[in-house]
Length: 328
Image (cartoon, rainbow, N blue to C red):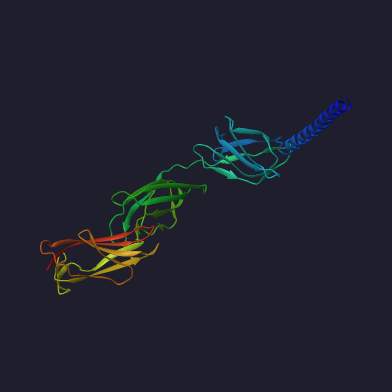
């Protein structure tokens, strides 16, 4: 009987302790929730107008963005749109430091600024006057050539950097056609042009001033990063490894030394230089001089294709080809 009473008392005591423990946990949870709400309070407002810099007219449909960090290290992104009067409003904003804000609208340059402090329960007015894109009434054009061969460079990438009358930067881009020709539109202001092509050293133009309805031509001659040239044979008749008379194309009688010149102007070093005759690899050079003694006899074939390839790892190669006639 006494054991039964003690057993029931133990159960009741355990339930009481469990109830007290759960009450304490719930109390701490409530405190944490309230503290969390206090830390992440968003009770401020940002508002303002977006207008055209030149006319002062309102800009409707501008996308407005604010990026804010509070004192606890939390980050907030806010976004809204301006109405038909150019007005926008963002409510329930967290207090803190706005490190960047801006506006984006069709027909206008991006508007970006920063460094605004926002206090608790504060209304901050931020007006944004946006620069419109200027009319592209003028153009820049020209040709892109290989400085070594004088041939046009196809598909070179050209980028126009144009600062308009409000010093707002606009980019334009194009590629050269099969004749090396390019053209790009812009308006009054000042500009420069850059050009790049795989395997070539890129170039920038000088900065030019341009007015409305004006055309400026700028040509580019690009140097290859890597150039291969065949020094021997040249156009002429060779006998006993020496040219005896110039001719319209190389004619070789007997053995001859093929002499190769490789110039690295920029970029990754050469890995090796390969000589191919009629598509068959004959030799790979890893150091200079690049001289191959060609004494192979081909009595049933007299016209041959010489191909020299300078190989580089993870960069463009350079190739030179030459058709020759060889006897004995």
